Structures are given as structure tokens and as C-alpha cells.
Amino acid sequence: MDPLRIGIIGCGNISGIYLENLQRFPKTTVLAVADIDPAKAQAAAEKYGVPALTPDELLAHEEVELVLNLTIPAVHANINDQAIAAGKHVYVEKPLATTRDAGAQTLAKASAAGVRVGSAPDTFLGAALQTCREVIDQGLIGEPIGCNGFMLGHGPEAWHPSPEFFYKPGAGPMFDMGPYYLTALVSLLGPIKSVRGATKISFAERLITSEPLNGTKVKVETPTHLIGLLEFEAGAIGQLTTSFDTWASNLRNIEVYGTEGSMVVPDPNNFNGAVQIRTAKDSEWQDVPVTRPFAQNSRGLGILDMVYAIRTNRPHRASGDLALHVLDVMQSIIESGESKQLAEIASNTERPQALAAELPADDLNE
Image (cartoon, rainbow, N blue to C red; front, side):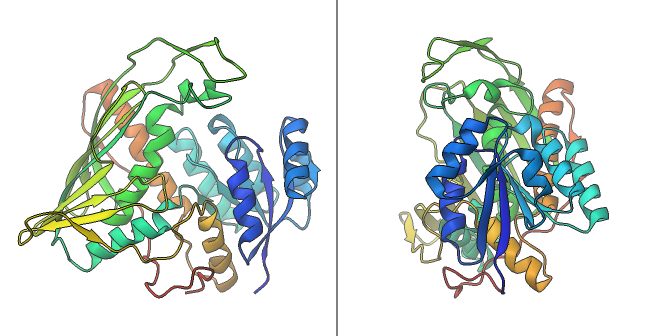
């Protein structure tokens, strides 16, 4: 099986781990990198030993089969659509786009062009969340009836070198971190039927304390504390809180409740973590061994799965349909917070196929 030839547009904070992994994976080859800032592209090119191009040059590169879009969320849809128009497959950092309409248009264009769209996050394919999936599928906690999710922190302005975009429309804690939580929950519990939302902006401005913008103030233009009530197609109900406004919390990231027990799901932003269950017969929480592959930071794993899917003509797991469904849910939570009405989710998706338990750590050909 020939490696998939990849070009990367966007050489910001997240690009390093993708470049490391895509150069490590056996079925991916990075041909070039590009960025609207030539200095960023050149720095990545020198560090990872690949050519630096302009975005237009990369899109026109005849040997590039897939464009990895690591730009800021505000231009995700535009770069996606340009890559599709150039006849390339696309894999984009979360979110797929900043609106459901833009995301749906991207998928329609890809279908017409005969190319595929994939999207982060792919952490649901990692060791911890695949272990949680096995707990659900084996019925160890019975039929799922509910869940809680909490992403509580005080924003990225203390550590991110360029955090302004986190406070623009199409970002905020729901669009930034919500994809990890919602993708994990859809993988575990299936698609979401409806939501109710409550949202607020607690601070009109944020003070950047990271370098090089230390002392700069950012106007907040999107909700920064959000609660979504979730109703799943299969019958479970739950809630997800995402916040850049809280200073501390000791709540677990995710818990799933079943008719015969409960499960602690670790941080869905990571590929590893402790999984615990406690059933009706247990007097205390029990650790579930996490023996699945991809326990390290394996960002790009969704692309590796796409390689095998493209070469063998099967569906890929971190799909555009899954990403659009998550985007639809996030936007609907915000809209429901504004309207104070229940929001039905128009999009749908298949629950992604689980990875085989015996899967070798470098092989997704199944």
C-alpha cells in the first residue's frame, strides 16, 4: 500500500505534533508545508526537513493527495473548499467550519468532486476512549442512560502565543474544546437528537499574559460559559458544560451512567488516561486496563485511518459527517441559549466503527 502524500497548510502551535506523527506513521508522507506567514512555514520546513511553499503553490502541487488544514477556525471552510476544488482530499483541525451551513457546503462540494473530508478530533480512536467504547459495547455498565461532561478552565490567554481567535465567533470553549467531548460522546452513545442551551459571556475583555502579546486586551465576541442538555437518538440524556470563565474544578471530565453501573471517562483531549467502572455489585471503583494501541499523543491518527480507507475503499472514522454533526450540535447549543427554545438536530451521523481489539499499533487496515 502506497503512503498517502500530504501537504500541510497552517504552521501554528498545533502543527508540530502532526508533523512528528505523520513523519513517523508508516503510510503517510509529508511533501510540503505552507502558511500565510512565510516565516512560520520556513521555520517548520527547516525543523522537519520538508519544503516550504505558499498556500497557492501547495494547493497546485500535483503530487499532494490530501491537504491537512491547520489554519485558524475562521478560514477552515475557505481552505477546505479550495483544496476540494483542487481535487485534494481534506483533513481539517476541529471544528470542520464555524457554521453548520459552511460545513454542509464543504461536504457537498467534496461529494461532487469525489474526494473525502476528515476532521479532528481523532482522540476517540486512542487507547483510553477505545477502551471506554469496549466497556459500552460489552455491556459492562448495562444500557447507557445518561452522561455528564465538564470542560472547565480559565482560557488560553495565559499560555497560547496568539490566543485572540479563541474569543471570536466560531471559537470559545464550545467550539474549541466541545469537539473532543461531543465526538467522544457520539462514539460512545451515538448521534444526538436535540439540545437545550444556556450561555453567557462573563468577562467582556480578556487580558493576555502569555508572550509575545503580554498586556494586550482581547474583546470577547462569543459565549465563554455554556451548558448544553443533550438527548441522544438511542435514548440517553446528558449535559455538557464548557467554560473559559472558571478558575478551578475537581469534577471529572466525563461520566457515563448505565442501567448496571457507571464509567469514568478520562480527558477526551488525550489519547490515554484512567478508565474506571463501578457496577451495582462493586463497593468501590474498579480500574479498567487500558491495553489498546495509540496511548501516546497520536494526533493525525484520523489521517492514518483515512489512508487505509481511501486505499481499500471503506468508510473512514473521523469523517466529515461526524464533524458536521458535532458542529451542528455546538451551534445549536449556542442558538438555543439565545432563543431559550429546544433545538432539534437536523444532521445525523453513523456511530463510528470501533477499532479491532487486536489491532497492531501501526496498522489500521481492517
